[in-house]
Image 1 (cartoon, one colour):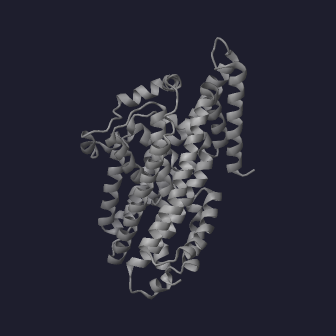
Image 2 (cartoon, one colour):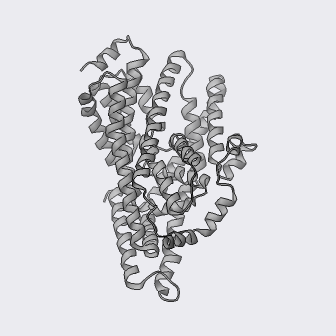
Image 3 (tube, rainbow, N blue to C red):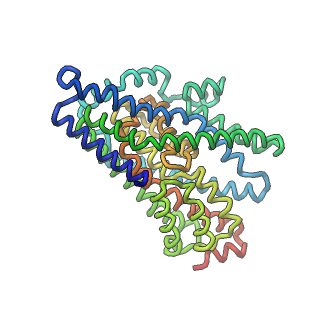
Length: 430
């Protein structure tokens, strides 16, 4: 059975077992249902938490290496600088639009806000020690956040999970590597690339435990909190799928129409093949070979452009992840009753764009980053277990706008990098 199918089976089985056991025996109380309490406390919860911790340990190296290498890989020649500027500009605009779409969908549907006060209190009690520790470490965001962007000790910031500081250091390191002579930069680049590859492999190995982890996490959540939480999860899934659909079909179409000369019909004839591949693999990296062929043969874009934009996009252009990050963080903050100010909402949007840059282009690659962002806001990162049961399906869907958006970015860069280039005129022809 395919891994995604195993996870979906585990999702359904965990939910059914949890709801069934709760209906038969009630909540897992040591006095009224000791056997069920033992299964929940000694088997399901620890197994699910081990899976979450395997993801959490990859947060810092994944973010740091991806961002630093992405910036350092832009090159130094004037032509590459122009390509890099156009590419990063498009990535920034489309990712910001994706985060705004995610925020707008949350405002309209309000997933997570319909929980009863009793259920929310029970959730907070369940995660009380973790929540208290995070809030004590300074999850708030205020004026001092600007100063804290530059840590006194970058290693201490990494150990304490200060993701804003880690991202800032990664950007500075990437810029420094970009500006020093290449022979001096090579050893550091090779080290960062090696660390990044090891970290991605750790994520892949952790995801092999996804079926068991998902079953345990969803069983634990449903047996403790019942149907009300499951209903909010269903609303959250609808919100995410709606946001991803808007980003894929509306936002991308608007950007292609406004910034390129490609007819939308021609664009979507190629993009739909990339979308199917992305959905089935849940991986931007695995879809990259297909995208390269579609961009050059289907859209007529010059290989020099596609060979630069598409690999970079598969690494740092994660519009689907930006939608998902925004909705997930706001949803879990609502579930755990963590109030966010208007400034913190804006910070979530900005961090969704920046943190999505560090998402590995493999199944589950964004999960460690979400946990780091939750910790920054004072929401227990282990609370990700609430949504992890349905994440596999959402992961398949959020890969689609990532790869479709990469094709749009390549068409934009081909249109504007060399306006008089013959290859460009060919790409713009109907």
